[in-house]
Length: 386
Image (cartoon, rainbow, N blue to C red; front, side):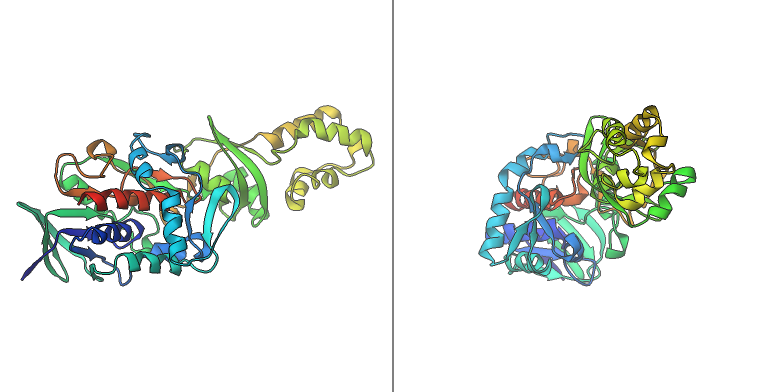
């Protein structure tokens, strides 16, 4: 027997659950279909298990999209202040880290519990894999848990990142079936890999973290950079990874607070007997300083050499050969082309009643709570429209 609802939401992640809660609050009969065995698996591992649930300062400038203006409407309808109000109403203790990032004091489970509480009253079916979708006078969805129908269908199945958590290309398949275009998906907020001489000098530094500034074109980020056995990671590198085309390099300033081309010759004048690695270690982590200080005492080094070394450390060219892929990517860039969606509702312009929200859409946030805020905002926009 076919069961009927006002809206069917496919995907019980951040965007899908928030959409469900918004729709239920409007008195809608809501079915949530989740192909996994539990809801919100990606929420539970986020922020090191404490969930960076939003950011104090959110604007369209914090997102990548073929249409950088698309996200403005949804973000304006539901803001970080709105979500923080829900967090405080639920009695969840939170704290602010650097750059406006808001985290739970205790556990990401609290955010998932908040979402499930908002969505109480929905019919949630876990282990429900969608097998077919037919659209006539409504959307008829055939699943491993039965047949369901509704006049509205919301696709909230995310992107391709972290396949071990169940990520698939389902949203893209549905979008193409209904005539929407796809911006080619690619890993974003992802560690970068290197090879050859670059990898050879990076590998011995695995585990070293340095406060750096990275720059690609006009886009730059000042956060920690981490050396790994395969290349580079850390917040600064994850951020810049989203903006790099294949084969594109970037610059890393390993000491953004100091002009080393001036500081090193000055140190030579003041401390000629000091070793270069000792001086460099005042500006860089000791292991990184030792790597670049393959010479002896300051007095033995020409000012020209010190200036050149300083300038290089403030603008070190790096060209990755690849990245760690969707397995390690925090999010997926690209996705359902916003050209085919209404910015106020996230509904498909050519298919009334069909909506795409969250990571499935070509709206990708920076590291720091922005992708969760897009999940809440897009889920809210669709939940108000279904």
